[in-house]
Length: 112
Image (cartoon, rainbow, N blue to C red; front, top):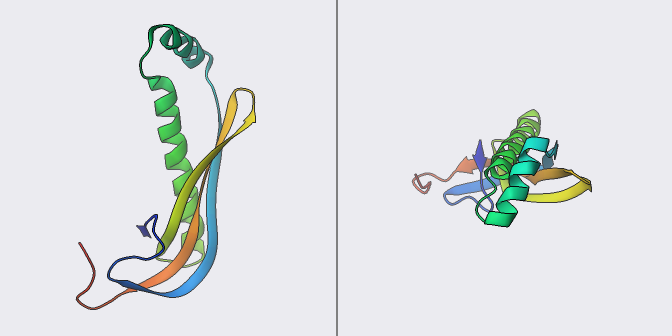
């Protein structure tokens, strides 16, 4: 599956649009992470617990989006975007979306 955040894929021709695909996950903060984050706010530095939480959420949302693209028999997703929103205090949604397409390689033009 080719995944790009552009409207086109260099070296490929989009021959069919399959539609919007999306994946999301809602994650809640962990009490231990909250306490560590409070300390970091005083001392400064990266909030590693939250960084790890967002990395996992992004991975899961992307996997769900790609599963939807596979169901539509797409071989690529173009114009991929991520967004977040607060659902409730202490919980946030990470949402991935893009356009599922069928793309064919243009002979001799695809980039490695």
